[in-house]
Length: 316
View (cartoon, rainbow, N blue to C red):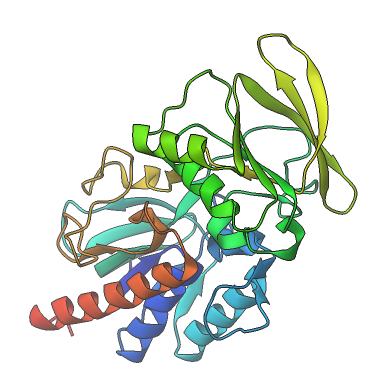
């Protein structure tokens, strides 16, 4: 059986940052990057331009940023495994982490498996079509990009997140349309009022986007009125999914406490989960900010906390 002082499950800004800090603390971390169930490097691997990560005034592509994170983790001798974790056993210590090919006993575990943005199966919105070419799932991440400026933008959803995205996009788009398949929103009353009172926001009730069209980028959406079945073609500079995220926690089998929305619970102000020496960082425990910079920050926190706890227990 392989043994490690610390095993990190998941990559992305949180996982790689945790690895950098853990490696520099001589914890010799082992990091499962993921393979089949998620792209190694996290959601940024499907993001084109990242313009809000500090230190890159001209912007940087998501894959290039993650490649730099990865190389820095390797520089300090992190062991990287390009495989998924199929299961964990937190019932006894040391903990057992089982990958598709490799199993480790770990004194401490950091979970950084992230969350996947929910998307709808709309023709034109998929990989190889207009995904990240005008179709995205994060207004804060992508809304300021030049392709969205002074264009008609469409947000799909009906909750608080959809309205927050729409209001944020009013800074850049000429008009923002909230497309909702029902005739009432799920959002809180105050958020609904903000949307209805904003001159650049319009709610398209009982409507869906049937397909997305364009050339190199999004140019049009085909809208369908669900009450009349009438379709209309409208100019569009971008389509934003705001239909929630799903945290990647299924493999944990409820061995740590989760919030009702599936995200991992951590003690306030820390990365400590309900299980001793098991920490969580990045989007898997953050349903509020969901940014690369906050994920990286929490990865740093998790590694420092792990090192302190291991030291206090004389594991190192």
